[in-house]
Image (tube, rainbow, N blue to C red; front, side):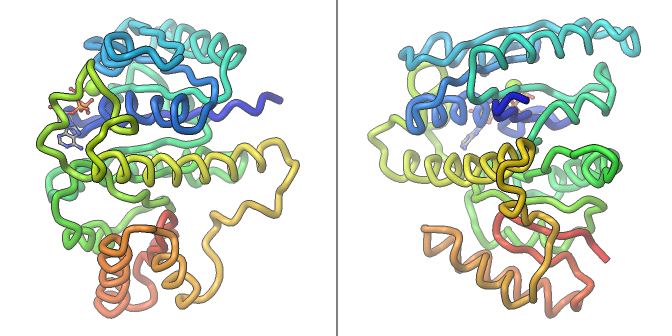
Length: 289
Ligand SMILES: Nc1ncnc2c1ncn2[C@@H]1O[C@H](COP(=O)(O)OP(=O)(O)OP(=O)(O)O)[C@@H](O)[C@H]1O
Ligand SMILES: [Mg+2]
C-alpha cells in the first residue's frame, strides 16, 4: 500500500480560502518539508494551479483536471480517481483543490487521508461548513472503512476571540481543528508570485509554517496508521480526561495568543454547555453528545 499522503481541500462555499490554502500547503510540503509534492486542481478557475505555475518553481508537480459537471455520469469520478492514481506514482504528498458540487459521489472522500474544510469564523460561513460536514458525517464516522480525518481550517482569521464560534456549534462528526490561517491584507498580492512559506514577512511565514506543520503531523499519524506500522500512534478517537484535552489545547500551539484563545474557548464551551458539549482539543474535537 502506498504511503502517499492524500489531502483534499474542499467546501461547497466559494471564496473561503481553498485555493490559497491549497497552493500554500503544497509549497509548505515541497519547500519547507522537502517532500515530493503534487497539486491537483479540480476547479474550473484553477486558481491554485495558476498560482503554482506562475510563482517561482519549487518543484511542485501541478495538474489541472477539468471535471465534467454532469451529475451521476460516473465520468467525473473516473477522471478524478485516475488523476489521483497518477499522482500517487510520483509523489509523497498530494494536495487536491476542489469546490464540492455533488458531481462526485460522497464516496470519493474515502480516497483521502485528510479532508480540510477552510472556513472563516463568521456565522454565515460556519453555518455552511456545519451543513457540509453534517451532510457527510456518515463518511467521517464510518466504521466499516477507514474514514478520512476531517479538519476544519479557520481561514482569514483576524480575531482569535471568534474561535468560540466553532466550539458553540454542534457537529455530527468528530473533527480536528487546525491552527488558524490568519488574515493578511497582502494575501491577494501573493497570488502567482510568492508563497506564504517563503515570504520575508515573518508573521505570514511563521503562521503558515505552524499551520503546515500541524497538518503534516496529523497526516503522518494517518499514513502510519493506514500502513499499520504504528497503530498505537492513532489517537483521534477522543479519549482521556477533559483536563488532558485542556493540556493538548494549551501545549500544541507555539503561538501564545493562539494558546490563550483556544484555552479561553474551551473554558467557555465547557461551562456553557456542560460535559456533553463538543470538547475541543487543539487539532482534535470529539463527537457531540
Ligand atoms: N489568509 C488570507 N488573508 C487574506 N485574504 C485571503 C486569505 N486567504 C484567502 N484570501 C482571499 O480571499 C479570496 C478567496 O480566496 P481563495 O480564492 O483562496 O478561496 P476559494 O475558496 O478557493 O475560492 P473559490 O470558491 O472562488 O475557488 C481571495 O481574494 C484571497 O486572496
Ligand atoms: Mg478556489
